[in-house]
Image (cartoon, rainbow, N blue to C red; front, side):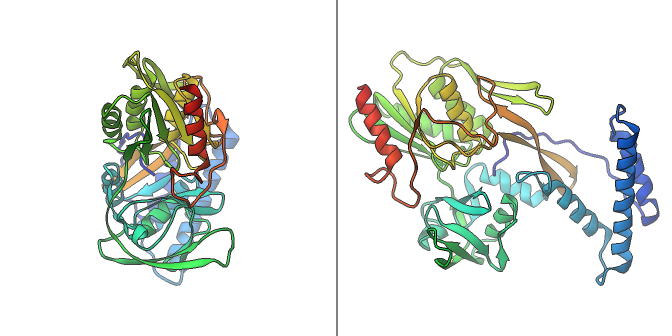
Length: 394
């Protein structure tokens, strides 16, 4: 997933010998522990650190293979961070560079977007001219295995790392198509430079323009604005289906094109205090087109920020399914020259002060989506409902 907020804080580290390992942990404990912590909580932390130290030394001295201290500590940090939630992770400098490249819509991989639904990893986008598209992979396919790795229990970041790699390297993917578990297909893909789709638009008729936002990248709001300036349609259908999110600032800039002056989103910390607000300061023109927003179960994160603001501000009507429900902020902290941690630090709230994390955004008009078909035809039930609604308001 793309990072919504980036703050770097460098933590001082000390190179430690085995003999001083526990001592340093006690020092860190007293530096960072809350002074108001009760004595029993402090004792529990001390006991946990003692257990950690014991496990560390047993592995160092007894494990069948020799493990160096750096590898063991990285594995410990990795398990601690990834155990927090599905979105927290530990990153290297190379991982961070790949994330920053992805934010502008380019990366080396196979050309799919994946979202976790329960225990399943569902393909929600297949980019044009990508290895995945050439192999016949379609939206709705379920990835069950990448190479020799079975995906059950893996995190989003682990899946991303399995799919990306060096250009022209090969990776095999096993997918399940449809509801039959025995309908498994094996696709052999060659990684290439993928240019991710951001925005596409077309005129449905003389009164209606359709703008599809695949994900929020650095240039998305500019592309949306260009679509809107092409002509003067009276209705815009903004399609956010299968949009996994992206950059917070891109979603806020897009919101300014549709909302007018007012609040877009709040960010609250774990004490439920508002620590940031994003405000649209651009007034809407008097002849602003009618807005219809399409959502489904895979509209997430930044897409939910935009959809929630439009709904709360009554700037348009939402048609489709309840959205995914990813309303959390990840922040990146620098630990050392080659180690960063990405952890969840806050929640997003809509302008009416409602959290949508694990809940999603409820549409005004509910219509079930259908996966695996070509969009914008008679089988696209959400789109057909949007066209009927637009005609009824003309």
